[in-house]
Image 1 (tube, rainbow, N blue to C red):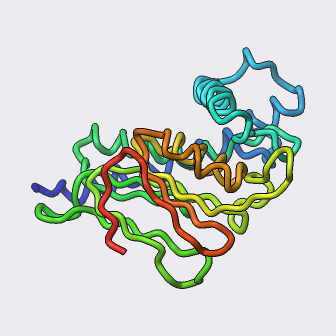
Image 2: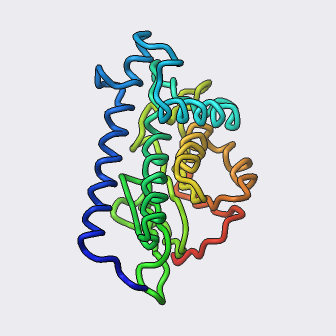
Image 3: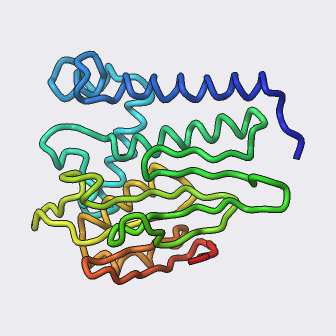
Length: 230
């Protein structure tokens, strides 16, 4: 691998931070001038939205239908797509880096991780996931060259992952797939669904999953190749 000049890397890093700050300004529901806040309070119409917010609204509506309502951007009573947006924004940043020649990278915000390429010529990325039942310990380590991993559990996301009819969440869920926004939505929906999600996660053929129930029992599988090193 030929490394990019440090000046180029600095420019790309600045562009990623500028992009993430821009997305924060657009989607922060507590910011009175964000498009999400203005829309939620009836101060602008859907037709007034910019392309990014329109794209996210469309994607969230599709994911709401695909998860039978368990991924719900209005579960708190207000329009808040931040659980999808964080993953989507990192995915867009990853695409930008790859197009600019920085195809080997790792991006992370909280429990959402996007890796691409390799850290060195002979190694793959190692993505570690914390064990929610044993603080400070690792549940599993995935070895991969291209993966988007999203984590959801009630201790991290609170009411955003509550089960709509039962108001409880019973699982910790990690989803690894090709696109981080979708992985975040599916992980959130799995936690909201609780134990019945274990019957549905295997149907996500392009994802790998790991779920941990309230008793600390782990379940993993899926159709996306990933090497578990733990």
